[in-house]
Length: 233
Image 1: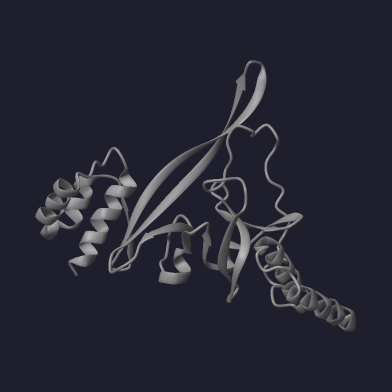
Image 2: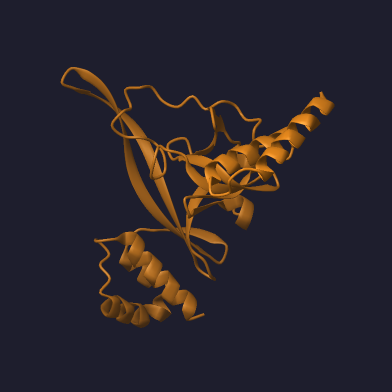
């Protein structure tokens, strides 16, 4: 069997060298197949199959941004993989790997961080050794002495519309600050002013100068303020 695998790998590597490099998706697929045969990605491909959700959940989906796998990268079980296709299920709080013909559910405990279409996510306990957190995976928005995270949580509901049974995913978004090794939920401007009382005047000047509107976009508001605070350090 080892000789057979080696022969298949050599053939695929030979094939890659004559592939048109403009066909990135084809090259990525071949590279992934070679890596699997050589055992480099055995750990990430050994998870259980992801079965998805019943067909009556057709109007909405549980995934981050899109139900189509996005190009990404992941640090998984101590190894780093890039050029792979991932989904982030925000209902189950799990990451799903798309391997051409199947979907594989990854073990959250083995994930350190990952990206999907440029958006960054972290397993917060793995990177910052925090305890007693309710969730594992957070979107990483701002870095620095003060770090900002976003957590979108999806729940599912069933409804009967025009005598048809319909499943719907509903979404709520929360924001958190990592400060002095504590993860602090932040929900409004007043709380932000209380946390950073010494910088309150500077924050108010920033809000006025940038014409920041909390109700229009909480994320933009928090990102601007946290970036400002980090620049004051």
